[in-house]
Amino acid sequence: MRKTGNKLLRLKDVLDRVPVGRTSWWNGVKKGIFPQPIKLGPRTTCWREEDIDAFIEGLTSAEEKSQDQKGVLQ
Image (cartoon, rainbow, N blue to C red):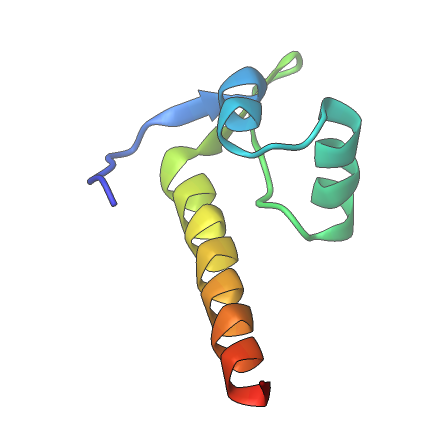
């Protein structure tokens, strides 16, 4: 994984990395499934790049565990 700094991502950048739609993303944020945003102003919302990368890494780890368990059961 690449080294990230304190970069902030706008919604468009997040959705380029996470393959869900805008409405699904906001529903997931409200349910606590996706990382919480940072409000920079009344119309400016962003996410910490490291939070998004950690979320994606968690998905990758969960997928690998799922594949490992399937191999054990067969």
